[in-house]
Picture 1 (tube, chains in turn red, blue):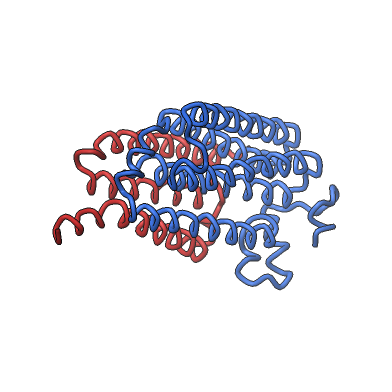
Picture 2: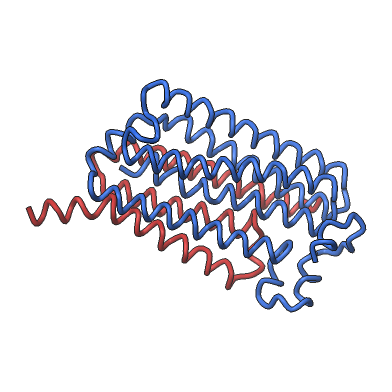
Length: 95
Length: 203
């Protein structure tokens, strides 16, 4: 097995697990710093999806496809994050 | 194409996708594995994306009720399952690398390990369902749980399908089949990476 590939995939896995821990840590702040926590979770999740797409799925060899997938997932995450994080803020501002 | 894909004598190369790139698939031909799998992956991501956007829309009608329902979920179990799937994905990716290096036995063992971790995921998910149901949280108890059971249940079905695909790939072990099976498995991984924070953590 290619040692570089082994090293790259292992580093990717460490990054993914570290981001998972970071996301869990951020969620603990959700009740107090809701908007910030939701934005942080969405950003960390997007980074994780990019790592999986680029290294596990091998899309770093196809940058156009990588950008397309990451953009589509970013749209989904932004819609969910806005619905959860920003909408209550707007509701409070206008009530 | 399907016959070639499952042939045990399929030609191997540094990148099996190079074969596909010459067969009129356009940009899909440059991606690893069988292009049909990539069409499936795009469709599956669209379905899960639509479900999550639907969830976000429904949540706007009752944010307090959704937060209360979310708080009953076991976030630790969700995080453990995330780590399990990420590790499984690592083994699937390593299996492709082993097959690429023509180490067939190592590739099979790595695929088996990836599949075993998939079974662990299903076990943890099953125990989560049992806990929620014991607490009276079924699919009709709140709109949150309807989305929770539909999205995670549909994902669990994909895990089962992925396990079957990995078993087929371990038997029909051409490089293209390895890349195709691993691509599906990573899609399952990718969907969970997005579903977990949306359902469990963002609140």
